Image 1 (cartoon, rainbow, N blue to C red):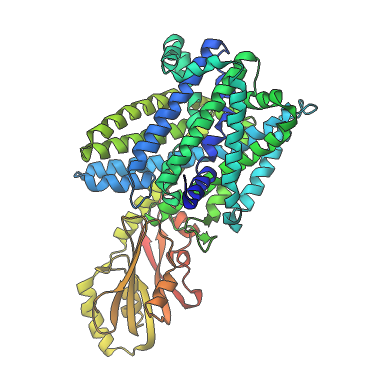
Image 2 (tube, rainbow, N blue to C red):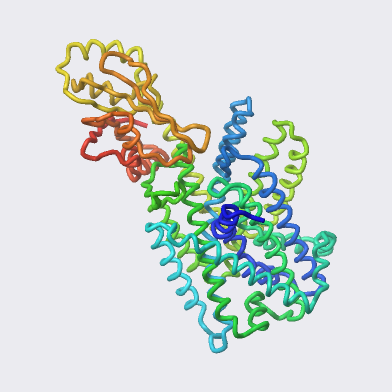
Length: 603
């Protein structure tokens, strides 16, 4: 028997992790049979491919292999990089893995744009099954889907923790409806159960040649969202997600088998799930349609929260600029809102809805970059297991990665059919990451920081002879051993020396959570250092940490970079720096005490 906490954990997993993969039965079979004829052998073969895709890519790759890797229970592409880098000896290998992780993050974000669009639009298209609405225009359906998306993104700033408790129970009802409708259909065509045998998947691929291979590009739709098992591990814990997946897996398999059975009996069906429900019981169709729209909204919500989490990881590991973050819950650290991400995402979702217009056309573009992300996860896991000499998992991981790569190659077929959009979005994100990280490195080199010993030599003389200002001044430096240019410029160039001067350094730990803060030794009379170390997923209130340490600052100085360049790449970097908040705004330090010191740099 499950205890109360385990039950709550499983329910939360249903709502926050499995929305995307849980709503894929709405469109997966319908899309697959747009590109392959509906015959008994094809239906059985496709069902077998779907079942074994769920087993190999979700159960084995994510539920077993990936979720056995983590840091303090955290998962995700950045965590894999953090695990792998210390195991590598060569600096070149570290660079390759770092870039590979950036590509993986970009892929996830690139395909994430399509998730709300395809989920909501495919559910709204179920209106056409209602008698009298068969001829409703596609433009009207796109408008309804767009309004739902706008409403969903508009409530993000208010936080979702007040309604999140409903997500789990609603998704349980959704999965139960899939189970019951699936079983009801299987009863009439029980022969579909033989699709559980992998022989039929292999037979389908062998007998259908190249066209069968390209069917894999649509079969992958059944597994999109599988990566959320690992990415959300830190929010909910490993065990609740794995236990929830067992129920979700059975629900999905029964739904696909039921839809396959319906398709064998009704080969002319185009919107398989909705037509099956309508035929089974007219009276429950409207409640089911409403439930499906709610389920797709929950799936979209989970994806949006996941996007916020990925960007937040990027900010804390310094691969993304310091975007403004609002924390929408006093209790849950994971409940964050990033305005820039939210509205860019909404614009992108509305654009792809308008561009593709139909869920079937969206599906033609969907899954390309997710398979890329899965392949990268597989490569990184194989390397970790190999370097740890865990040969069993390394071998299985290698075989799974081969399957990932097969799916990736089959998805190349989608590039001219709209897949170019997800690649374009992913490429833009990757370019921004590379420009930002390279620019930060170049800027840091241009800052010409002062060595601590040289700084102290001048400081001691100035402090002794200066007309010291009463109170405490704070200065920020990444590393106290190299003093940023703005600090000597303030103290020595402008003769601004306080009685008490504290250099604050904020550093990210390799672990996801944990906060350490302490005073270090006094560097010189009136000069101290205070270090704050935090996990890369940690949400911190710097002002509160300083207050708890007994620091009562009178003023806070920070550096502002004014970048001058003719290089187009660095112009983009300069624009990113200007459009994003400085770290003092990011950490919400008291604005009335802030003094920015401008330093001009040529790049």
